[in-house]
Length: 463
Ligand code: GDG
Image (cartoon, rainbow, N blue to C red; front, side, top):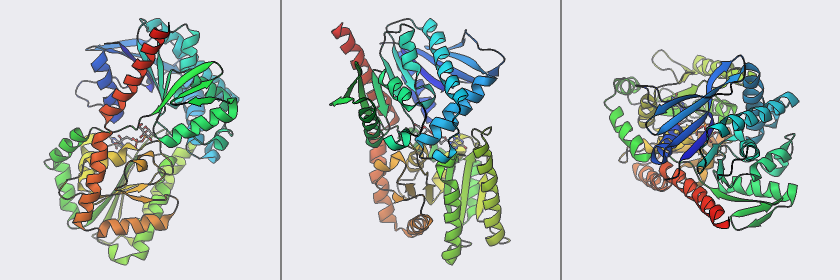
């Protein structure tokens, strides 16, 4: 089988006795284990000077090859261009964009540096799979290094519509970079459509079936919704019944209903609007007081960016305000945790919740809502309240879909969820779980790699 090379901004090197961080790390590892190969990227550390030689660790048939980032690149490439320019624009949040020329230069520089180091590690005859918005220029930079093998790119976040994209200085360069891949994957049809429109408007590209022809380049495109491993999550959720923390939680809740949110602490996740909606629920539906508990886990993320720090403070204040207004001696309505919990604890919480509240203002896919559904008891499932602006809304029609900017629709949906009869909960759960089984994590990577292999065969045939 052809060797696989995966490149992502951060590399998840397995540590003995520590389970892998998230679903995606598991999916990528699974693909690498199947084919054998290398995972290349940043090790999460800061160095004094750029490194030209990756540190390598071998686990079975996978080589983990990582580089540190010099302080300046960490600030300008990672925090700066990736997370203060591309991330906000691609998430509809122009107000949060902080464009600087030094950021754009660092973005290009780091991608070229990654390409030059990576090219020394390649054996030839491999499949190369680049992940996400930090590495858009990598494919073209690898071509400049003389790499001939097929290179695929998957965008985990949404692709913005053309008018929004145009606000990003240098957007033409990003589009051109994307056209240098052999296969481009998006989370939803909507993202693919937005990309096609952008290259048609900008370069007069021509679309032929699933291929874009433009400036002498031909790139195949496709939609590959990221999924979850349903059976693994279900098994973990069943085990959580035996978990001491989960048992204690059930005792503490008594017959109160649990509403649960769990997100990276990020402005795109709609947490402020969600807190406002919960407060409105307590204000307007007085019978919910005493009977409802809202747990929000907000896992720390990108703390060095001012917007993220400000959001953390704002949420602490909001939680304090709601509790100050409504709490009683024997009842605390909001439990807000700015921490990352072990995965099994998180899944135990999903299992115990009556309502999963997932209301991002914009999200490429959103795995939390899929994990919530997969962790439910098939006999007595909880209800998912989901933003219609998350990519997952295209698949999960069994959720109660809400506009995350409209607090009143979130409140009504929570109320409807808490009143929902068992038959309807089961019916909605069945719709969602069968889609999740069909569009599984395994299926996501199998389809992408199958199409990338086809590109390889086509190139060999063409030659
Ligand atoms: C990007 C895109 C797309 C959260 N809190 C804890 C914890 N988590 C885990 C969840 C989930 C993951 O983090 C978050 O994934 P999401 O998909 O919801 O969001 P992003 O991080 O923004 O991911 C997104 C995704 O890429 C994949 O393509 O869906 O649209 O933005 O797995 O469970 N995990 C642990 N403790 C926590 O406290 N262990």
